[in-house]
Length: 86
Image 1 (cartoon, one colour):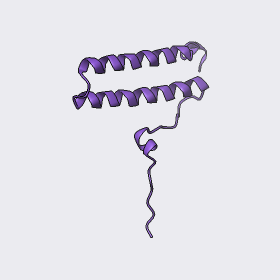
Image 2 (cartoon, rainbow, N blue to C red):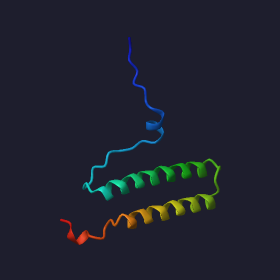
Image 3 (cartoon, rainbow, N blue to C red):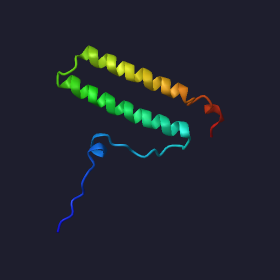
């Protein structure tokens, strides 16, 4: 009897990759936010390519996502103590 590897729909649609950088809680949180940003930008690009979103709507949505990512980056304090790291 053959066994089939069933792929969870959510794992397929929303793949997550393990963080492999320098471990700090804020880096891990930012990485999750960055992956979410990347997925959302991909969806927006696909919708624009298919004519479901205008270029202007796409730009505005991506700009809003970028602002959220920037707030996350600064809110987590990433890069503020870069001179103290090896």
